[in-house]
Length: 159
Image (cartoon, rainbow, N blue to C red; front, side):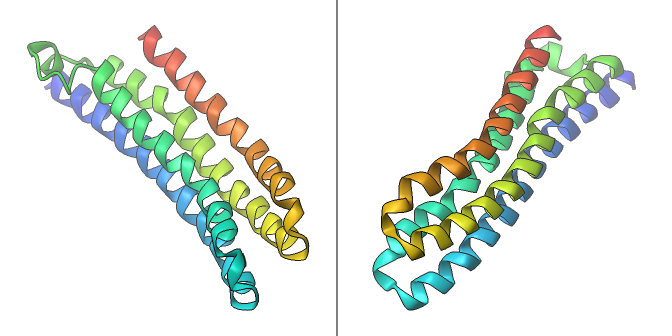
């Protein structure tokens, strides 16, 4: 019974990691896309640049997906061996907690990167030469998602 709870906790950890990253990306991309749609309505020639700005907060969803894959892989569940069925509750909790930095950092940074990207869209609409500046400002927020990935990876290799 304990091993079933451990396996369930690993699945919950993987799911939470992915869903939080997906949610951060979806909200962030929504903010940026809303701003971009207004600009494209006035300046259709900026569609490519606006699309790039909207896509920037999408990376947190990718990090969440990678985090979920790492949790399932490190736990042995993806390998499908006998050890995958013998995960203790304590170990399951460790896998769940190891995914939280990716998930939480992805949620928060994805949302705020979208807000910064939306402001970058306005910057580009005023002067296309500001594209590089807008990207750099937006990517600065992503640094924290990358740190979340790093911490989760360190936790996973420590289990």
